[in-house]
Image (cartoon, rainbow, N blue to C red; front, top):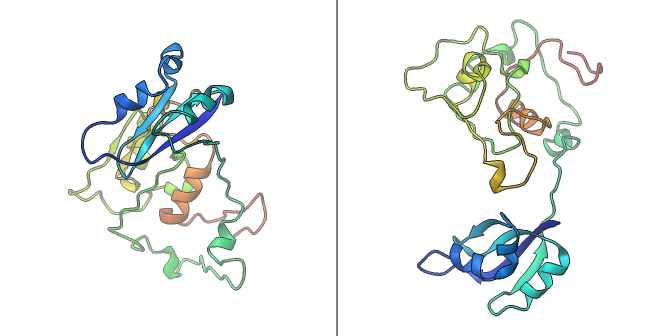
Length: 206
C-alpha cells in the first residue's frame, strides 16, 4: 500500500470536487475505508489515496484523469543545513557576555511560522529565561499539547498545532511535540536563543 496522486488538470471554476474524486475510483474506494486521503480543488484538480499499484492502474484509464503517480514519503534530514546557509567557512560567533549575539532583543517582535514535524519544548534553544514579560498583544495558543508548552514555551511560539493524522497517514503522533527532530532543528535555527556550552556530539563546544 502506498500513496498515489491522481492528477485531473486545472481546478474547476466553481463547485466542490471532493465528491467527484470519491466517485471516480468507484467501488475501489468504497471497499477500503479511508482510502481517500485528500482532495485538491484549488489551483489543480486531483486527489491522493492509499492504494496498491495494481489498484491505481485502472484509475489511470478513467476519463478525465491526466496522470497517476506515486507520492512517496520523503524523510527530512539536517545534514546539509550549514552548507545551505553557507556557514561551512569563515563563520565566527562570539558568545562572550558582552557579545551582541547574547542580547535577547535580537529579532524581537518577529513572528516565524514553521510547518514541520513539530517542536520539542524542552530544548534549551527555546528557554525563555531572562526574557522580558509577554506582551499584552501576544496571542499564544496550543493544540493537543501538554502543560509544558504553556508554561515554558508559549512566549517563544505564537501557535502550536498539528494536522490530524487520520487525514495524512497512520501511525503519526497525536501531538505537536517533535518526534523526529527536524522541526525542532529548523525552528531553533530560525528563532532559537543562544545556548552556552552547546556542541555537536561533543564537538565544536562553544
